[in-house]
Length: 263
Length: 263
DNA sequence: AAATAAAGTTAGATTATACAAACAATGTGC
DNA sequence: GCACATTGTTTGTATAATCTAACTTTATTT
Ligand SMILES: [Mn+2]
Ligand SMILES: [Mn+2]
Ligand SMILES: [Mn+2]
Ligand SMILES: [Mn+2]
Image (cartoon, rainbow over all chains, first blue to last red; front, side):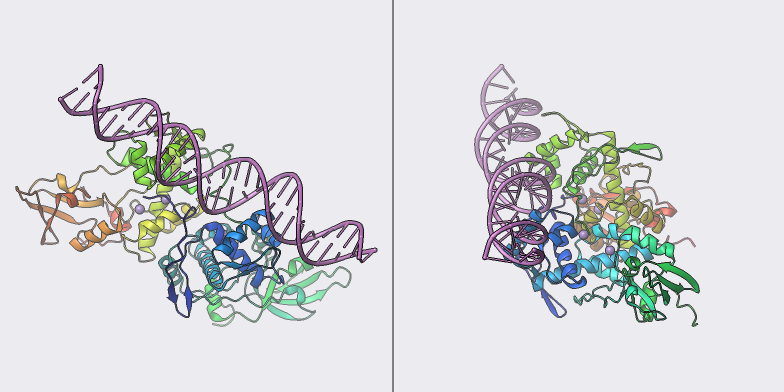
């Protein structure tokens, strides 16, 4: 059997392997370390935060700033972040690559959970938080193939490719649209179960066409029309709905949707 | 995001829930604790060992006996084992139930990996060692349904049912058969990749009919006939091949085999 | 530029898991 | 029933990850 050495393991940095167009120093991170790297990647590249600080990271990870300072020193010793006292924090190239792999795993598992096990999009994030730490390249490659190499996850987030290409969708939100403009819903800015369930209640779905019928001058409430129905939403809510160009056919398939209308 | 609190968590023993015919005190075990419980269950109920000791456990888990002694004290404090200094070790009813759940998860994941992701039976154990610790009852129930409620895993081991019924197959081995006896291969006593690959090489498969053609009086080498082919195997090897009655139809399906011959 | 607020660090403690080395108990052979 | 081997425990140490409380540095505001 042999008990799980993963969390309490000594690290070796010897081996390295070349994947497609990038070299990854194969090391074994603890789950905690993976979570720190993932948080750093998200804060530096997915959110609009200019420079990530200890407090920000601590908040995101649900730990105290003192803990983060400590961890940062250890991550620096392992050449995973570049950082010095009171200075700003950034991932090394190698760590960025490792973080991308974690996000890739997270989103592929979420896709599996929704598409094959029938979970709703508000249930999968918590479970994927655990599955993302399972370490087997073979596993994730086969899962990817099993799913038909999906491009987006159930929340509309882009799934990094095997060779480590990671980019976030441009963050245009529903709250940025003016009256009489139309757009397609392509993502959400909040993956919490409560928010996603609220989105379900409102009737919004990824891939849906949205028409901004009006905006109240007094309180900025937005009236949108989806599926021919008129609905009123708040600015706060609209700021968490990402909009963009019409989804590609592949993306429609990834979401398990029918392209309504044509054919 | 919130980092994985699972491994380093304070434990609460307050809540309890009733499943089918058993009451389980819902607690959160660390991966390490789960591995100790699983090892204890396997040693006490699946192997022929009369009483489990610290050395035995240490060997099985790949740690030193001192570590086991330490852990046993902590498991006792949490009412997971009954044990006193120099005395013998046993799982409490509650811990047994928890251990069975881990084994259930392990075997369901192994089934998924073989059947749906195309892994070979020698590759899945290591990966399942990690997947078995993912904590979501909903997940495992849905996986079970997705797989069609399989009864046996890719190694022929029985999958515990949701209501916690766990039993091992009677351990009749190929080495126990006499000359001219026949039997069906139903399992293996060693799940290591190296052994399973050797079994593949030899040509043995679960569900196969085996005829013991002869046994050498001098060195006890066994000559068996499978699929019309004659093969010579050692006693050591034969002792790790479990034999039994013909597989049930359901079990054939679980293994993804065709019942050759009829129909 | 000084005062205050915010952000970040350090020191000291805790828990989980592991090890090695020294020690203690148990069991077996004669 | 003692000698010796086996088995199991204790003690002391280590690392990973966390906290609180006290402290320091940097940023903002007047
Ligand atoms: Mn997610
Ligand atoms: Mn995570
Ligand atoms: Mn296994
Ligand atoms: Mn395990």
